[in-house]
Length: 605
Image 1: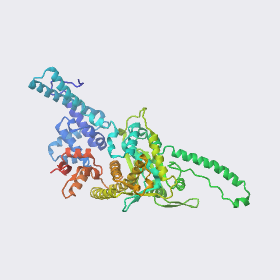
Image 2 (image 1 turned 135 degrees about the horizontal axis):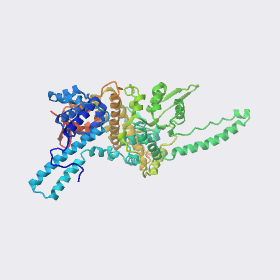
Image 3 (image 1 turned 180 degrees about the vertical axis):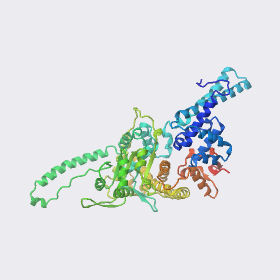
Image 4 (image 1 turned 135 degrees about the vertical axis):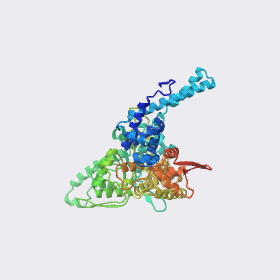
């Protein structure tokens, strides 16, 4: 029935031992903010036996949500009472420890046991009151005990599948099916798969297409992605391998084979040319050595080698980095290389003088990239002004910790790569591998109106609630909305075998793709916010980021009605999601109002 000790005693817990453990945990939280950051989600106020400890833990949670220091003075100010001073002194007199896992588990177990005692007492009362027989009594008790057994399993089980992090109904068919298939390899975090897939899709299109909002922005589908994760657990090589199979299929291999045939012919032609007399050579043109056509570029070599590859492949492509550290170091240490990368992101014409003489002109140097880096390496190579300058803000981030992954397993999975790769082949067929000028796509009227309204409202919200560095990251991400919409439209049209190039009205992107793109952007805005918080903790930002509580307050106070809809809050406030809203309401800082069919958030009076 249960492994818990069921008795008629008021409590089976050693109260003194429990109090001491609670003091140790709270003391450790006070002396090490990172431990609280990592462990607080494993506890609730009811995890603590002593009422004073419950109050102090609640205070710590409030300070944490408000991005304030968790220390003695701030707790006293938050509690606004001298009643808990002696309890704080007892806590601070305890010895903090660095490994709290066993202590946390003990608090959880003690809480369960207290709940068992309470359940047993209530069940006995119900038995007497309703005159239950032993079988009925057992069923009542078993039901209550099963709830207690699962007290701390809900949060653990919430991580069982990373697919729960994404609403697949908001993704278009091609993207939804492909992401689902790739996630089954190792239950990857959804943002990790999305960033890899979107960069790859954009890399295949390259400079062959661009999109305008019809007003002031025209962009190529350049997507840069950085995956922050423990290197070995991430199994990024397998993800890269299958993503390339699904997007590029055999296209790059066929291009290599074509290059090898041309190279063999070149060897014959150059041999024949050299065998000509000097007089005959004057009347002949020396054969040019062929260069391979690239969609997937090499991830090594000098900046000049990369420029040369782009000169030979002016429609661009993608680079997959096994590890991103060396690339970021190279970028930060070489200003001319950073200028090249910036041009490659914007698709702007680049004129480069070579060290050995001569020049290279890149008309539209479009190059996507995706790479993995560990958290520690990112902190070591990033500069303090990388966000403020806008350079690092150009990246889509997928920020993952060890807890976001499961142990690697050898298992069967079935991905029909051909059904996706034939879509990639169709895209290249309709756009043309050697296209000389990009095809210009635009939003249709309905999509344009929606996009402009969304952008203007989103921009106002960012202005009202974000620091300069946050706004820089936000504005960079908003340009991705057009890129996501273009990439998804092209691939989904190819998924349906529609040759969209044949008709002018097929070059208009519809509203459904804009809505999908905005949803994807919110996913990466949340990932970006995690990275900004990481930089802030490591003193790599120039401005302090407000907590989501303060941002929500600012947003509400800037409205005439002093309220905003729940959907507007999650879609326009950086770092705020549904779960955080529920927490803030549970803490009594905000409340919900339902007007007609819309749920609004307002401050608690």
